[in-house]
Length: 51
Image 1 (cartoon, rainbow, N blue to C red):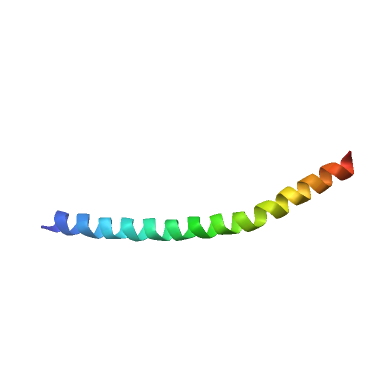
Image 2: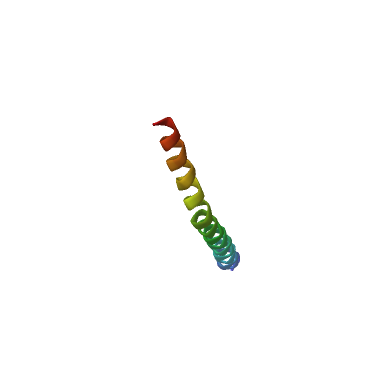
């Protein structure tokens, strides 16, 4: 019985962890979509200044 209870609790913890990771991944993706053009703009500007 204790093994079954442990399996269920570990699964619930795993699903919670996956949910948190998914939220973090979405947050990072949305931030990257905002930051990416800025970073690309900066690198293009810097390379233009170097050349």
